[in-house]
Length: 197
Image (tube, rainbow, N blue to C red; front, side):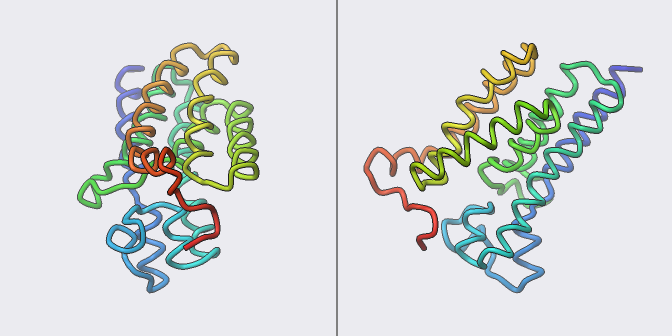
């Protein structure tokens, strides 16, 4: 029975992760499709460029909640660590490859942070602190995300969640892959800073 409920939690997390906040917010506010305008990425940073702070804030909230909710529900239901950690991963995968939107998703930063918050609140809050500190210092969203998710497995490991830490290593690898063009621009000194179009 635990395995059945575990599988349902993992599948449900993917389906919730597949709800694209960026696309829904842009449609509701009459903004361009973030998959074809701006950077082409349906995420908070691109929505900020396309529609401003209100649209970006709604996108950020939606993307974080779809990471927090399924993971927190699995945890509250008493699921073992492996189920909760895999729910975090599948919510993240849903954002990257959403079944409801032709598998055209974002890069997963907000959903990954939300999943981390649901998995282990102190680690999630520390990760958000790392992102904010990095953003203040470097003023580059993608670099802040890369630093944060490189640190996330270590935060879970020192919290005693070894399986979750291994899962977040995979999640971090996927996030780095999604940011491969950003990494290329960072190395070339061409990555735009926060607040620039």
